Image (cartoon, rainbow, N blue to C red; front, side, top):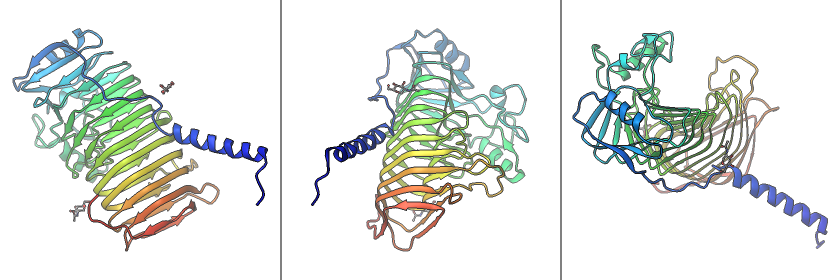
Length: 410
Ligand SMILES: *[C@@H]1O[C@H](CO)[C@@H](O)[C@H](O)[C@H]1NC(C)=O
Ligand SMILES: *[C@@H]1O[C@H](CO)[C@@H](O)[C@H](O)[C@H]1NC(C)=O
């Protein structure tokens, strides 16, 4: 046997080093530890009535580094903004209900709470814009009341979403938590239920931690994505539980690149999956999804875009994922909209699947756009159930899946 020369050895080390650096970098670059609830500046008790102005006043006068403590009862509120450095602590047993008065959320176009050819007509329930170190804490609940009839109307937010689908128009429904252009934002242990629209959007934000968050909206409610980072960096979503009517998590990049993202120790029930896309024109990279259970959902691990958007998705590692009763356990799709036009070709490369256990039969799709830009994926220890279908087009896949996953529950 020929011994490798020192030059060659150096080469091996360089390759190893680069490989390990790349692996190490495909995650949130921060050291994230379990958040602590800051001291309170004021304690409030809810009496079930509309307390928008009381809450906003308390938030506005709270000192930086402190939280407004909702200590007991039920609060009803319209849109709130959380100032920089301030938190909202919704204590155990406390419910913050989103008002069903659509007018309160209207952005001035008078279309919030209607189905229209225009969209984006509503302010969110909770807005964090251009702030640093703000957050929402506690074991309490934010109830979006998506299924409750709106004030003065015969329909709920969810009804509007269905009408919009039939008419091919837009429902103007509020997002529950919108974080924009901010830094170091925390959501800690709260439950968010019955969302009228998206639960949480983190847009153009550097440093976002969702720790121990539960999101729960019926799967029949349309467009109720769980958590959507877009154009955000250094993101950790951990210890989560998400059931909803659209993507459980959707990493987007419609306004800037999304990178350095960790999704760990989560449990996804019904929903459209752990998704990347579909608005990913600025690209998504350096994402790790580890220790995920998915069940009873349409998709498992999904990447979606089309030629109207393009987008490079690279350096993505999925490891230790278990699924049962998932229709499309892996779906990498470059023609998410078949009717899309344009020359922005989506490119997915450096996508690694490690220790994936899919216990029930499903459809696996690797649908690259062309042989010039094939999907490049690696499989290590991917176990799938008998009776599954495996479809690849314009794809370079190294490693093989093995048929013969067993067990009935993850
Ligand atoms: C991400 O976190 C690392 C480590 O804390 C930091 O050096 C880097 O600047 C952060 N990136 C952004 C875009 O904030
Ligand atoms: C499988 O998941 C679907 C939702 O995708 C659900 O309707 C169905 O009841 C589930 N089946 C079982 C056996 O749990």
